[in-house]
Length: 123
Ligand SMILES: [Zn+2]
Image 1 (tube, rainbow, N blue to C red):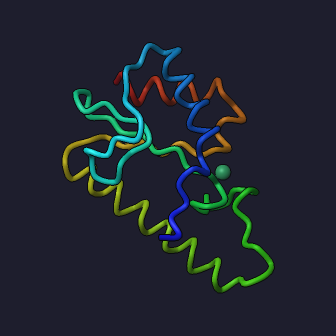
Image 2 (cartoon, helix red, strand yellow; image 1 turned 90 degrees about the vertical axis):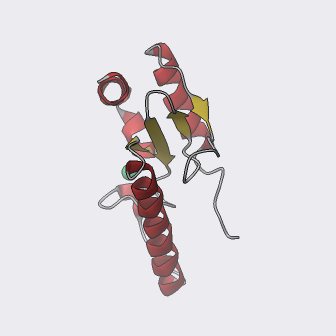
């Protein structure tokens, strides 16, 4: 229902490629975990969400502007999206699963992102 699902696909593919290069083993769109994380490994208890900066309203990000038309609609939409994201992360954490959010704009610096992913996944 108005759920944006495939906005992150290209970003997700790039994040998956980086993880693969690090030797990480994972599944994608893991529906057996709360919130169906984009990338997860249940044995390692790790889950990653790859968020588009616009739809998930990355605070302070230049890609996360509020459209000029229908501002109230967008304000509510973004607030709803963020609240849902937080619920998903909380549901995973309460099961003892580490969660990481990767923002689309982090792909502008793949080296830094790669380090962050390595630290999250293997530590
Ligand atoms: Zn961003």
